[in-house]
Amino acid sequence: MPGTDLEEAARQARRLVADLEAEAAAIAESTAEGPDDEHDVEGSSIGFERLRVAALLGRAEASLKAIEEALARQRAGGYGRCLSCHGPIGRERLDALPTAELCIDCARSSRA
Ligand SMILES: [Zn+2]
Image (cartoon, rainbow, N blue to C red; front, top):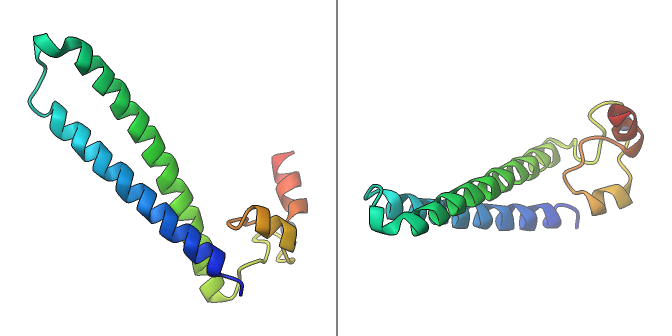
């Protein structure tokens, strides 16, 4: 049944965002005590970790947003329709990219 994949993808994306938020919170907590000269080396690796987690979190949130938008289109009955030309988006394209908003032709021409 169509839609199950998106629901599952949304569940996974939400879990990933929650995990990364917990990780970011743990890092923030471990640095909340302020800089400590004795932990300079550790401090710089924590800074790197924080950037890495923030980047991953940003990407996870963006993909969750795309999935939720696709789910909203699905609820509204517009899922699988191109947002630009309103033509159907090919099944193969939706399988490969469940959050696709444009049909392959519009995606190509918008990139060109
Ligand atoms: Zn189109």
